Figure 1: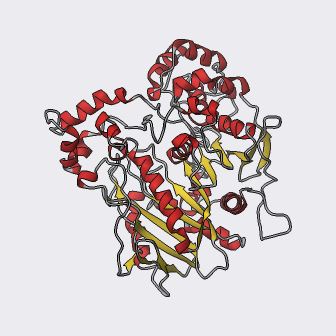
Figure 2: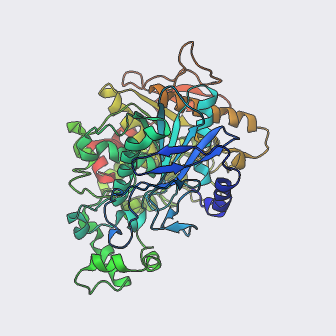
Length: 545
């Protein structure tokens, strides 16, 4: 995610009060009370923004598992502005700890039947991000649904990040507050289940959608409570993420970080250090927390084991799924000049626990051959003039380990148990992108959200990029409606240029390749031996458990 939203937040909020001017104010009667939203005449949509889904996590509720709203209100409340973004690693503006809000965008007008729902979970490494980021404007994907006569409702929400959402300590574990950020997400999904009917949505037809850490979060929800199906969602779209990311460490991993934090805030000598941290000024926490990214742990409740342990026992909720990754992704392992440099970097890379035998095997499976390494669009076997000699090799290993291998692993797993899964490879570089950057992590998001004009600007390739965005949008909308991204036969309107998107199978593994010049279907067999090794049980435990 880029940080551009901090400078454009004011623009978006002004839209919520001016361009979103109320002409016929939409109303929704939730379980807690009535909200008045904004009608968007340009889009023929209604928006309800900044509605709380939990009690403000302030004071003694700081770091605690989210608490449901336990009051009702009689007066009508305006829902025409995004709420505060959550406090986070970046120096984002308009942030607060009081940030647990949800947004709903729907087609305007009455419907004979409730509409299916698409819920967005933003990425950002679990330490930054916001549902108010203009890059995540939901109106584009809703407009696609309106234009092809398969309308949907779209939802987004904030969840706590960094130490506010993932502070880990025995005291928090005992009170049931470990992984608070993931519990925020779950409570938001429960709010959707309980309230979306008030907005015209169908609580039994919810698809959850995320990118990067958002997709990783969705995978954790699939494995949460040992795969218990609470009917909070019935489909999923995972972009560049899965049961990967930073290592899920044992609680003891955070002992030193806890000591550093409590010393920096003056809480180390207090008898009740957690109570002390709950009283610390929020700016002091910002200053004290910069040195470490906090991540989920196995807490014994939400996550009872590592995914690698739960998978053989089918303790996961396998709903129909779209899953994909970008061609290059761009996760280099340092900037190694030699194989020895790369070997050394891999010992500490991303806090993984790779052993010497595993590293040596990976180096054997990924020889230094710039002709076959990312960025894959550069086929002249050259090396990046601004990078060291083995940078392309490091980029290939890094991309496969962090994002691409898990896309194949989850697609194979879903296919093996007979659950519909559709796999993609996003292969379109942004029009002004550096060829040495390739098709990077996050490049696809502008296309998914139909939000590319600001990124692309006037260019000879603009029309083809718009058409690719439309193809992706239509596929997603159809998946939300029928759990199948392909057009229905003889029904509905469609302008898609995509070829038929096959289900993934072990016998015939296929990706759809999304490209603005021409999309096509490929055999998902490239780097087969290397990726299969990454996906073995032993290596998976070393990487992300």
